[in-house]
Image (cartoon, rainbow, N blue to C red):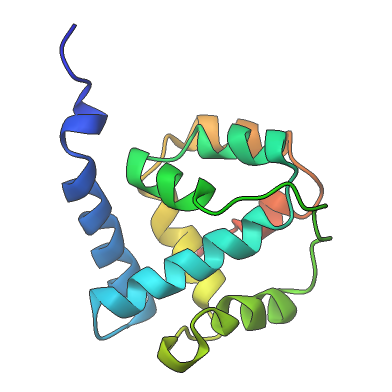
Length: 140
C-alpha cells in the first residue's frame, strides 16, 4: 500500500493551515499563529474526556492531531466557559510570547474548517459535550 497523501504532505498542509490562521487573525508571523493554535487546541482539549479527545483528534489533519493530543492527561474535564474566559486561557499559554487577539478561538475555528472534512467534523462535534460546537463556530 502506498503512503496516504495526508501523511505524505502533512508538514506542508500544516504550514498552509498556519498561514491561513495568520491571515485570518491578521498576525505578523507563523510563530505567533502557532502559539495561538496551540493555545486554542489545549483550551478545547481540557474540556474533553480522553475518549472524547481521541474522537475529536481523529477528524484533524495529522500534524494538528499530534499537536492536539501532545501532553494530554487524564484530568477531569473542565466545563465550557464563556468565550472571553476561554480566550484568556488561550492567551495564558506562553504568556510573554503570546500575541493572540480576542478573536483567537473564532480565527482558529474559521481556518480549521477550511482544512477538515466538514461533515465528519460536525458529526464528531455533535457527539461531544454541550459547548463543543459553539467553541468551533467560525465566521460565516
